[in-house]
Amino acid sequence: MSRRLPQTSFLETFEAAARRGSFTLAALDLNMTQGAVSRQIKALEEQLGTALFLRERQRVSLSPAGAAYLDEISQALSIIRKASTALQINPDGGVLNLGILPTFGTRWLAPKLPDFLQHNPGITVNLSTRLRPFDFDVDLLDAAIHFGSQEWPGTEHLFIAEETVVPACSPTLLPELDIRSVEDIARAPLLHIATRPEAWTRWFAMNGMETEVVAGTTFDQFATLAQAAAHGLGLALLPEFLIEEELRSGKLVAAWDKANRSIGSYALIWPKRRSSHPPLLRFRRWMETVVAKDRDTSRVP
Image (cartoon, rainbow, N blue to C red; front, side, top):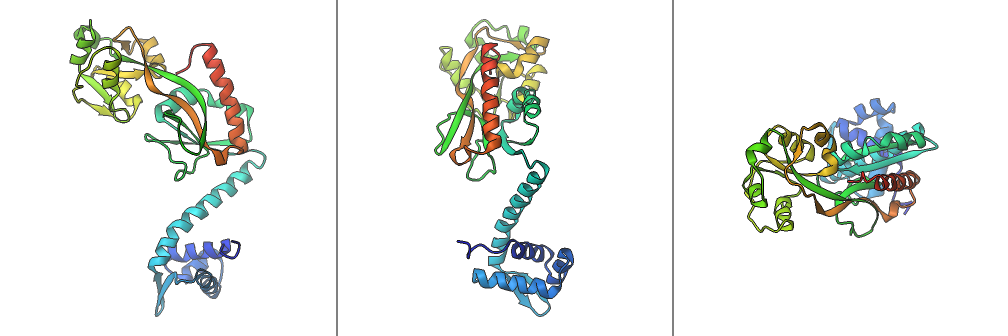
């Protein structure tokens, strides 16, 4: 395998020449001679057994194979550079690349994260927000906080909490809706979340009513959905823990006196191959204490 792995210096030279479209300009960037650049690229081509550049008179351009190779090599070198920088910054700590759901991250995790960083000063946490499920084979993540099923092949998980949802709207809209039954809610202007298109249908079924939900304004994040509801745009089905502050301040009011449990739960998920990653081990132990404390005080999502 070591014979198949080109020297990093050869790859950096190739990337520079491809980016600049010139061996001469690449030599200037790398503080090398043009001849040295040419020799390194030739050695790389011989090792790979294919031409990476098309040479025409005094000009060079990427071959089709070279262009495809550049995409992969640029990503690989970027990973190496980031890892090296992180190690230099935190030689005794490490980096945790964590995927989060946008609103969950800002409302639940962000207020708690300073405690983790205070007790683990050598660790850097990089947060990446996604609206769709994470793919550990594609995304460069050590772990992710996910809502839904935890049955992901090749992963392990730490349960965080179930989720309860409640129909909510602005206090000025509620009297106009005059909600006395589930049927009244079905007639109200309903707001939707793109990541859970069947949420209202499931809610009506859980409350004993089979109905075809009328399409309405749709949002891509719970934060903007909650804001729209607070401004009187309609009735939104929202996770209780995400709107605790709005309910306390009166910006939102519950339009139904019963909260229903969502289908799915929140969990920290990580690929088995990252199980022994030291920053992840520390984060998991910290999360276990946070979840236990929240459960004791009944302030879990």
